[in-house]
Length: 328
Image (cartoon, rainbow, N blue to C red):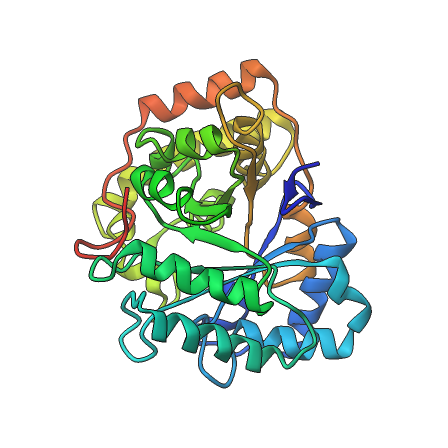
């Protein structure tokens, strides 16, 4: 079993973003059912965000309600929370003052029902020295507000620099068959070098690798994916060729495309020179959680076949629009 902060966690975690960061407001009962199913499947590493929704309904307010209703589950969950953005513009703001504001706001919204095991600034603020941001986080570790420090959407250089300043418990970056960038830009290698678990967000390619999205029309109006380069007309149709190939392989394997994609990510983490990889697919229903948590073991031959597929189908378009504050 993988470990975070010395605690064993399930090989597949749960991304909470989709439960609250959406136009449609999901009922507490529906959210709670998905969260309960996650724990029932041993998926006990949860990842949320201060900005995943509105001030009135976001990951923290939902977690407050859930752990108030199910206090017996609080000790079962290893909780990671992202924050550190400007509350109005959502721009990275890594000053000591804003880091403090963000953490204290998250603590307030959790209301004492659960401690944040890890906290990370969602993006690196290039206008603030990295040391200032990290030492601000460490002050809250020392105070007891958070259990440890994680990094999010960082470059290999930032990882190498950060470990000289503080203890880094995890690195959260996008990784999937649809987005293998961290395998090529040194991020995965840096995590392995320092023994840091890699938390793979969007392991299902923002839902496209589930096979549920066949056209742009399948993405709801107002959904942020409609703004991403890979989902634009022309690019999206080209990218679906890789998705079709993954679907074909999943059918041969006897699993869903999403399970194949998650199994690939976990399998990568077992290879020499790679860090432990914990994918955190999101889900909003009990059924989808059960599907996502069904682990599929891939053989070396099957891993090689997926690698061949990836080399044959070049993804068109970037992960984010130009100017988005990501490193890599």
